[in-house]
Image 1 (spheres, chains in turn yellow, green):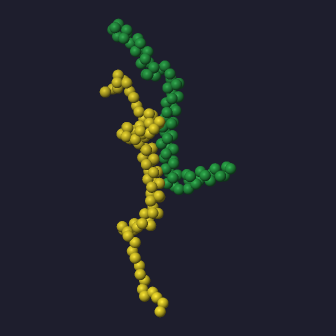
Image 2 (tube, one colour; image 1 turned 30 degrees about the horizontal axis):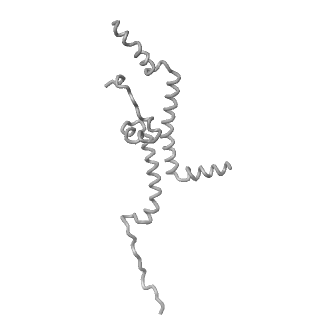
Image 3 (tube, rainbow over the protein chains, first blue to last red; image 1 turned 180 degrees about the horizontal axis):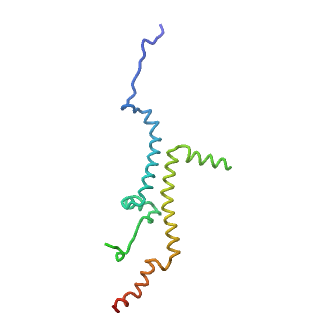
Length: 78
Length: 70
């Protein structure tokens, strides 16, 4: 008597809603690259924002000095 | 040779829209800095001697005497 299939045995893969290891594996590089693109988009539109200049852009090696604005104290309106 | 170069550019940049959009933003970020630096350098070279930073040095030499006259 060879074995025969009595009924379908199925397992449910671990998941959170629709998200399971397969979808995570598929979407990680896609969303990662879009995240990088979004980061450059944020950089483009905040290039003249002093907070971003002081926090990020001034720390770029070699080119960072472009965002360092030095003003002699006698020329400052304050 | 030329078509190979196009294939390389296609595979590196245009193949994935996320990479394409990202490289557009990255280029825009770099370009606005370089363009501003270039235009400022040209402007300051073209107007050398008339800019405040040049005039200030001249005033620094003669400025104190003028103050005494008043």
